[in-house]
Image (cartoon, rainbow, N blue to C red; front, side, top):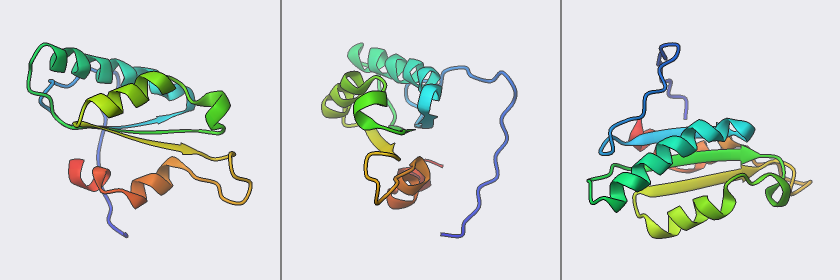
Length: 115
């Protein structure tokens, strides 16, 4: 806690990473689609026998039963591929405790290990 990471992103730089490169993504609500393209590219590479680096996806939305985009696909990938970690947060499911993506980032090691 208390660490800072400085980074910069070049506008329009959404080229997919090479399959062996590790990837860390945060998809908030409808912002998940570009990350799915990167993930599907890694799945394709893995299916073709290529070496695939870790892929960690943090996803957040309000309600799990109504807004869990790509749920079945993501959960199937998590079961099948050991290099894929899925962290899903839903802020309105429990009225006593809101869970956000930033909470999961703080509770897991993926972000620290991949950055």
